Amino acid sequence: MKTAIRFSTLLLLVLVAACVPTAQKSVEVITPPVAMADEGMAIPAAKDGMTEQKLKNMIFISPNNGISVQLVDGGYADEIMTLTLLPQIATGDLNGDAIDDAAVLLAENNGGSGTFVSLVVIASRDGKFEQVGTTYIDDRPIIESLTIQDEAILLKAVVHSFNDAMVSPTENVTFTYRLLENNLLMMRRTSITPNGVERSIVIDSPQYGSDVPGTFRITGSMPVAPFENNLSLTIFDMTGVELYRSGFMVTSEDMGTPATFDNEITLPAISNGTWVKLELADISMADGSVLTMESVLVKIK
Image (cartoon, rainbow, N blue to C red; front, side):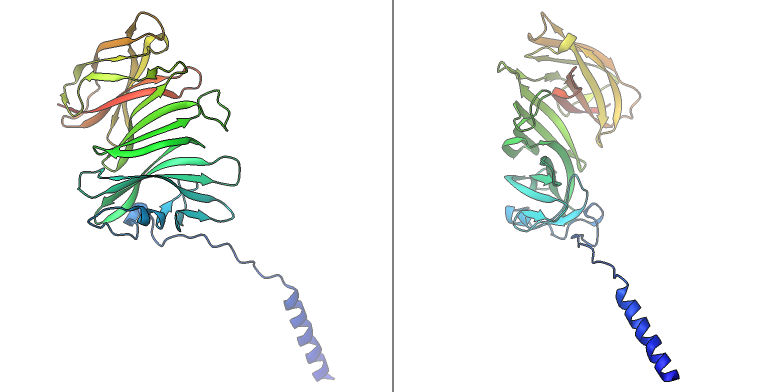
């Protein structure tokens, strides 16, 4: 009798255990053992620099989701997102070490209608290639060209303006970026007005790379005057931290006609020998976006 009871009890325990649900397997996300920002990618810097083949099969940090993914032949997909390397790829030296770096465009989709395109820079540092800079471009832009010239990245594209439908961008723009102390900074932005006139800013003085005192003059011109003849003047350090901001007036006969400027400014106390980015920008009154921008690097003396 006792033997029968023990057997019945054991059988009951086995049946109960079989009814308990087991934990489901989680979906594996490809993640490298170390972050690229800390120790660099697993691809060493070769003497001939970065190549398209390396870029199509390397690990990237996705610009929007912030996770590490391994591209295979230029693409990655899981049930959460897709990441695609666009065909426009530029190679060339961006940091002065005579090794070819790369500027690429990554298109990221998280399941909705939007496909968000970002510019990503891969540069050589300490014997490795690293993803050192990322900046958002637009949702479904039309990319016309991407090149590297004189250690600067030039991107020509058609992006969305304030009133554009998301399926059809209309604003022709050109962006210029530089890699400064491993920080990707936009140096210039030009665009084309609906009547075909280029919207841009030209800074004649101070010139790029010059020394400036605490008080100096900024001179230049614009083919199209800004709204109410007012620009925004901003001074950044080399990491992109804002040090100074003010309005900046230009002179023109009428709104939308050519303009000139010749203004004296006095900077706040900045240590001698500090490199700063001096930026003039025309800001849209409709949505606060930058219509056109020009900047120069100068050293405080």
